[in-house]
Image 1 (tube, helix red, strand yellow):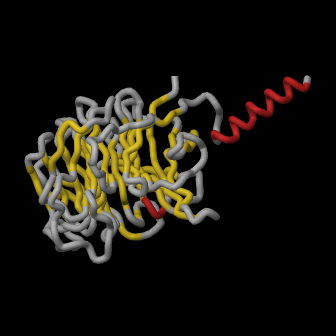
Image 2 (cartoon, rainbow, N blue to C red):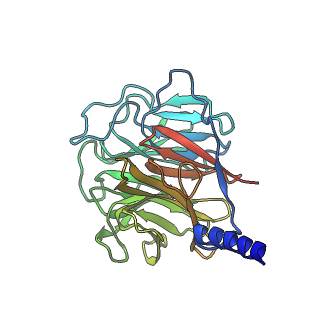
Image 3 (spheres, one colour):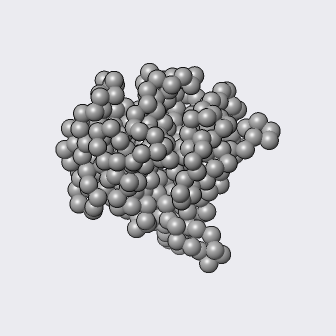
Length: 328
């Protein structure tokens, strides 16, 4: 009887820790990944995406950090790196002399690379190898109309080539464009009500063409159709200040990251977790940078998922990209 009670209490503890149940996919941190070139210094990795070859693309700030006001000059070294998903070695790099303050990165189904720059108030579409294909917004000129952005954060691209920009820190809206970059419409204002945002920071689109927006300072995800009609919101089940980014895998499962800037007794921040939604869009469980339920100092800024379920997050506090793989 004592043995039975002991096992039961352990099982109950696991259920409580995970928030729902223990019949879940757990993840473990892949150690010593990526294997960057000796002496290579990764800047703040603000954007993460995955191409058709399962290569990992990272948009980083080199040695630059967010300052007020932003620097006026572009970064003179490459800011986009392409990594082998197994070894983490650099396959290619480009992006020098384009950007002031790198932010979001998206890889579309044609292997194009979409980037946002909050310092330039612009968005960019590049070929896989780094050839500029499209640029929207007026450099260093923020505004709220069809020609301008104000600190745009991220991009989601639909199957028909139309795309959606979360815009952003200065504007509280989502902007829709045709595949050729023609302005179609915008929706959203500042606030906490449905359809309003306080920093729309990340954006994704699922296989049913539902738009998901990471409403960062409202600690929630809002869902819309492609015309901007509000569908519903998904709240983080933990009361923290920020929910900066989301990702959807090939099976339409939703993943998100959050951030708790609260200071611990040792003067470190509590940090970020990855959290996973079940098919009913309820939170299953959270895990942090150590692949445990504990938060440790970290600031996850973006997340991506490959076809095997491996997760990649850019940690702008640790200046590194972390890879988590499902436990077998």
